[in-house]
Length: 280
Image (cartoon, rainbow, N blue to C red; front, top):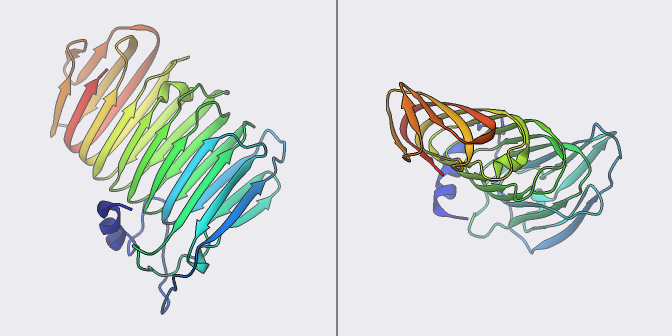
């Protein structure tokens, strides 16, 4: 886990993070031998399946390929981190155990490697200070929500989402977040909010319909990548942001327009301060 995340943990663990996590600290947490466990969740086979992954700290990897709803392994060396699966009809939660004290982070291990099936689901990820790597290409996500704290995350749709997604929502704190292949997500609305960090949103892929994007950020760097062939309109609501853009963008006041083909991306950016780049 990199130094940036470790430092952020020490501050954010005592505060209310983006996902609403709170931590209580008893006397001591022990680091022990590594334990590897398998996780399998059977698909309830309804059109209202809701999957929530509740993760505190460590490394979380999600990718396609499960025969069931979820297949994967978890490796941890703190007994309190033992994962739990809670099923309630068509609502399933996979959650980290009671993370009640900060162990020595150089010694702690908590790695989740989970594969998701291709059944239509609403997916929610709630996480704290962690490293995440998500590949959602080829899945059938009806809605996707990610809420995390001090994070280092790469999220990608390398292939088209197999159903129309209503809302993709990402809420984060002091993080480094890279989202790519977003056109493949096939969303109607994307809402991204961040604190102070570095955020990259790449709209490469196959844009199948008009989509609306709202981006809010505090202080930091926001990079918006839109292929030159895509129709796009970006409205920037900030007076304290340095804006960089390619020559294919035309400017009128605080509105930047790119003439392409097919559906249109309409993006509204609200930033306190920092830099914003529009590139292809």
